[in-house]
Image 1 (spheres, rainbow, N blue to C red):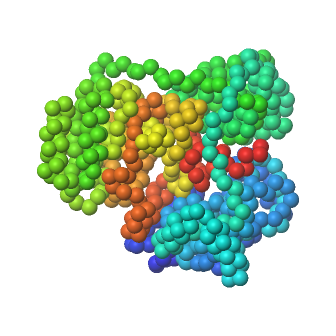
Image 2 (cartoon, rainbow, N blue to C red):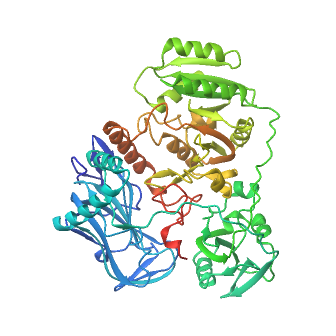
Image 3 (cartoon, rainbow, N blue to C red):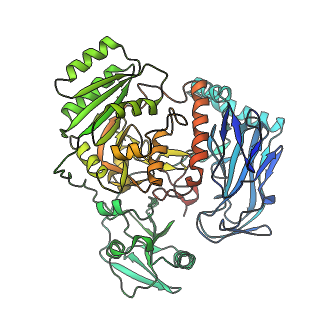
Length: 615
């Protein structure tokens, strides 16, 4: 196999090798299939893996469960321009071909996403290939389904159309620079024909929900919905099949279409459930004889007996208003000493704001601050620290070396003495004084590992509300870019809830747990993915990750260090670390219970998947 370099196999598994980095994908059970594609990837000729939920009967694809995805293995594509082609009977607009690689992240192809466009794939690039036929169970007949390398004439036609469109665009120069940067940087380039723009979350006009619930029975199960809601025509059939496939489930809830607005719900989350009623209806029961309040039944059921269907199986004309008041500030009778580890370099203006926030906009008293100097001007830093020491206990250590975030953090933790360690970027500024009380109260729970916060851009838009695995490549910031009004109606954004990972820009953990897993990984993830890897390693030890949506801070992201996409060197380094992350955690990319397959995984805004927009 070739990824811009040598190729070989280790223990029967395909290995990706580039720039002396070996990446073995764990996204498949056993040894993933590997093939080279010269002219076309004919998906109708591919053998579907057993147990994927998709059965092939001639030209008909039959789906036995929602969101069935076939993992087709690793494919090395010949360099050139490629286009997606799909023809058949039935709803083929939901069919989606997904390519994932460390260099390019996630590329998704469907009729709805892009028609008449093409993608420049660089020579020797290897992708993990997967196929989604539909979000809904059912059958689709296909006569053509392939990714084809286009001819030179076709390429010229697309290029000429796009050239005319670019010339007429008011930002033509910026677009040209962006295209050149992607090509020179060795990344895939998408040239779209007719494209459907990803939808953002929106603020719907709400209405009071109808009082009370009604019971609907059929196929041996029962559904409870509000009086003003209507079940999807296939709802009982889909829920009955889910009960049959999972005999241990007693209750299943689904998503709700509220006047065209669908907010995907996570799998059962006890932390979110303790903060608010995030499941209204529809709720399905194996056995129910009366129309009860479903939230009451969910709250007292064994979590192992609660399931989720990520489809809008009921609809109401307008969204119900939500009461998402922030939880009360927790009391800490014996607050632990918190060691705040702050790496810094050349933006002492940001560090000054950060320290001022800790001193004057943080009500938590038991603090020590360890500044890890990665090359700041010594005289200016000494002056700043001397002034801040009037209000804070501050220590400084010098690490003038190439930037390695885990190494800086680990050095700071070794110097500190608190029972709780807080990783904090120097471009963070708290908005409310009780933010750290909320974070520490969760960090001290015996089964909790990492705890994160809601981070906003200076304009108030969401920068971080927890991470979702498999989003925008390998992991992404879900709901990134939402306005305050858009975020305010989403329980998972504003309330405490579970996550697979949170960002290291503001991450608290007990010292004993930090030491137990050896701190952050300095070797595999010197810049990117180290925070996610740390959360997942603690999770593998049995410790949950909590996101405190009620702890809110401003994050001037990457203003002190810069963007990972700024230079060729950074792009190569980022791809190397993405490959290492795929090697270590690839098997979890499709198993994030706090996310949902109903999200559009090509964007971070929290938009719903295209196949649900006309559901």
